[in-house]
Length: 283
Length: 204
Length: 105
Image (tube, rainbow over all chains, first blue to last red; front, side, top):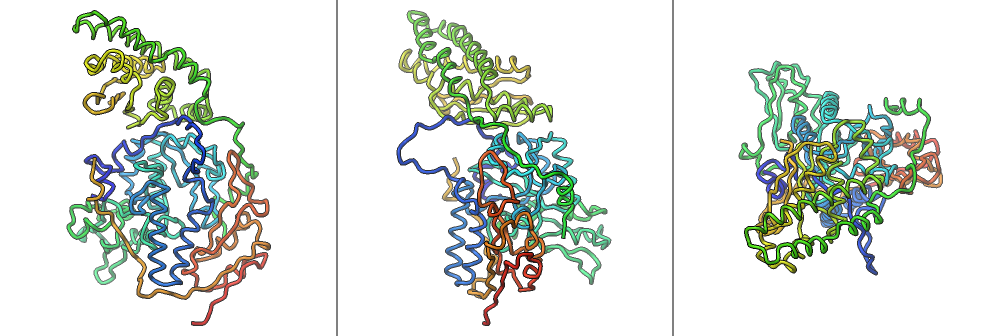
C-alpha cells in the first residue's frame, strides 16, 4: 500500500474510495477579522514555474542548496495542495481511471495547464482536451477563465470512459491529481517532458507517485512485434534484441499500463505492486 | 512546428471568454435569512419541549415523529422553493451540466438543496459531504444546533434518544420527492454514539 | 483515525548529488523585445528540451486574458539544466530577444 492508501484508503486503494472525491459546494462567509491572512492558492501566478526554477538554480549551487530547495518545494506542495511528502499525483492504469470516473461528480473536460505553459498549446476545442477536472469545484471554473481557456465541457460517465480509452490509444499516461487534503480533483493524461508533474518526478523526485501496478511480459506469448516499445514514457520498456522479445525493467516501471493496452497478443499483464516483495516499497 | 489543435484554433476566430455578469458563486445571504426566519430551530425545539412535558417516556418517540417529521417536511419544502427563487452562478452552471449530460441531478442538485437547508438553519459554515457520486450522497452533521437546544430544553435523556432525527430523515425524503429522485434514506451514524449524525441517500 | 507519524512517506532522489554543483548555460530573455510570447510561442515549440515556460502575468478573475496584448504573458527559461546550447531558440526568435552564454569550466 502507498502512504495515501494507509491514510485515506479505508481498506481499499485510496483513489477507488468515493470519500476522496467528495466536497461541499458552498461555504458561508467568515465574519471578517482584522489582520486575517490571505487565502492560500491565490498567491503567485508563476508559483509552480518559480518552484521548478528554484530547484534548477540550486543544482548550480551545490548539494546542500539543492536539498534545501527540494524540501522547500515539497513543503510548498503540501501546504497548497494538502498532499503529504510533496506527492500530489499518482499514475493510474486505464482500468482504474475508468473506475475513478464512476465515483466522482461532475466530470468536466478542461485544457491542460502544463502543455500550455511548456509548449504554448491551446486546447480550445473539446476534441483536443486532455485533462479532466473532478468534483464540485469545477462548477466554479468561471472565476478563472484564463486557467480554463476554452471552457469546461461536461461529460457523462460513459463519454468519459470513451475519452479515456481514446487518449490511451494515442499513448498518454493517465494520472490523478490532488487539489486539497484528501481530495482528488483531476485526471491528467500526459507525457514526459510536456507534463510538469512527470518531469518533476523524473528529474527532481517528487509530485507523481508510481502506480499500484507493475507490468510484466509473458515471454511465451510475446512475439517481439515491438508495438509496446514506443509507448513507454519512463524508459522502462525496451526491445531485448538477443531474445527478440519486449523487456521491462520493473524498477523503472510506473505501472501506467500503456504497454498492456497496446499489446495485440495480451502478452503483457499488470501485477499488483504490493504482491512483489522487492517492489512494494518502491513508489 | 505547429500542432493540430493550433491549426484548428487559427481557423476559428479568437474570442475571449468573459463571465456573463458579476454573479456570486456562493449562496444568497438574503435567502439564508428568510430560511432561518421561517424554520428557526429554537422555535421547533421549544414546541417539542412543550408537547412532551408531562407525557410518558413511551409517547416521546411518537410525538417526536409527528412534530419533527412535520418540521422536516416544511423545512425542506421551504428550502426547495427559496433555492429556486435565489439561484447563484454555481447552480446555473450545474443546471447547464445536468442539461447537457442528463446525469448529476443525483447527487449534485440534491446536494445543493441539502446544503442550503443546513447552512440556513445551523450555525456551521460548511456542511461536510462524505460521499457524492452517482450511487450515494452522504453528509455529516456535527455540532448540531438542534441537538444542542434539545439538551438545554429537554435534558440529556430525551436528547440522547435523538428525537430530531425525524426532521433530517423527513427533509431528505422531501428533497428526493421534490426533485423527482429515487433513493433510500439511511442514518449511518448518530450524534450520541459517533459524535456526529451521518445520513446516506443510497441508490445501490 | 490513522496515526500519521507511523506512516512511511516515500522519498525519491533522481539527482546524483555527488555531481553537484553543475555548470549550466545562462539564458536571458529581453522582455522589452519579447512582449507576446504566448501568441508567438516560437521558442516554446522550437526547443527540443522544453527549457522555456510561459505564464500569465496578469491573471484576472471572471475574464480570459488576451495573449495578443503586450506584457500579459511572460516566458522564462526554467529547465536550464537540460539546455545543450543548440541555439535553435536564438535562431527562431523573431525579436532577437534570447541570448545564451556558456561559461567555460
